[in-house]
Length: 177
Image (cartoon, rainbow, N blue to C red; front, side, top):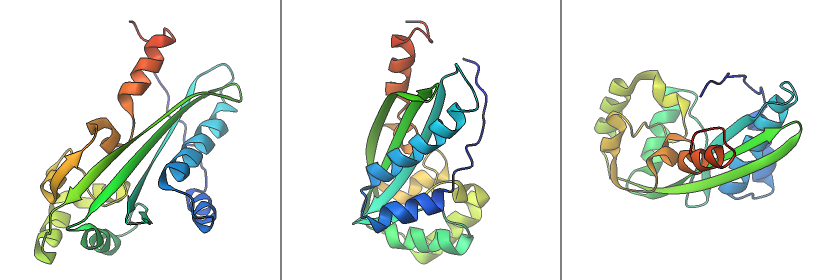
């Protein structure tokens, strides 16, 4: 299916600060961000369906953002080690200023009690890509070794409730049934 990428340029940090000041749940934060992205881009593309998505990591009431530096990535991994956290992914579809559809899913991830030395070796091997998502890991690569248990859909972990999205696209005859 052909698609274009058009960044929404939403100030995610400001949106998160505002929502967290209201003690918003991770699902609510992911929804608002996905919605803000899709609604903004929808205005630039009349008649076209626009997908917006976001993901929020929460561990024991604390929400984690994408780390900005290796030092922040290391701190996140140390905070998550030996603990279970949830990874909430949210997706919305907009067209012509209206939300048509939304879905969310949550994966539960239990990290092993990894050593500081393992974290540093992992960060060396993973490179800058780990700064592209909350938690500083990529389970589709070497990052799977950080985990003891993963419960949930693989696509949700990657950042998109993909199977519900495919159902929506088939139901709307965008994809073949």
